[in-house]
Length: 108
Image (cartoon, helix red, strand yellow):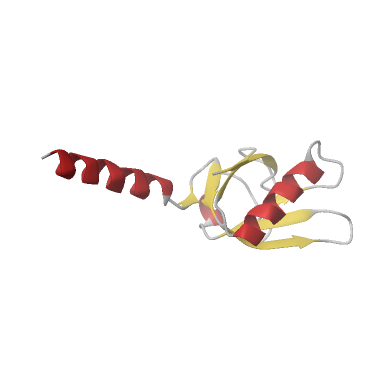
């Protein structure tokens, strides 16, 4: 019985940690694409469905960090590291923003 309970707990932890997707306020998953425009705006795409976010992106596929955003360089560094190491992140956006502006990023 003890093995059954431990197995169920382990399976629950694995299922919770492997969640990937987007909701109205955030995306959780692996970084699929990072690209920077000439004006310094960074666009971020995950393996989730960014169209579920409560914001407006020109392509409904990316979140953004604009040149001059506080913490942009640190978030970019974290995103690059996550992409390189194939680790998931949580990206929180500003709801209702016209460019799906990233508020913060956490490593999972």
